[in-house]
Image (cartoon, rainbow, N blue to C red):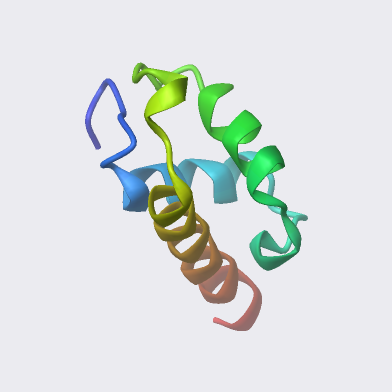
Length: 73
C-alpha cells in the first residue's frame, strides 16, 4: 500500500475505510460523507477538490468488496 494515497488509489482507500469503519455498509454512505471519510484518512494526501463521482464510486465499490469479504467470508 502506498504511503501517500490519492484519488487514484481506490482499492487501498477501500481497505482502509473498511478497517476504520467496519460497522458501516458502504452502499448506505452518501458521496458527501464518503468524501469526508476519504480526506480524513491520515494517509490521504491528494487535493480534496480533485474528487468526482466516478472516483468516489470506485472507492465505494472497493470498500463494498472489503465489506462483503468480511461479512460473508
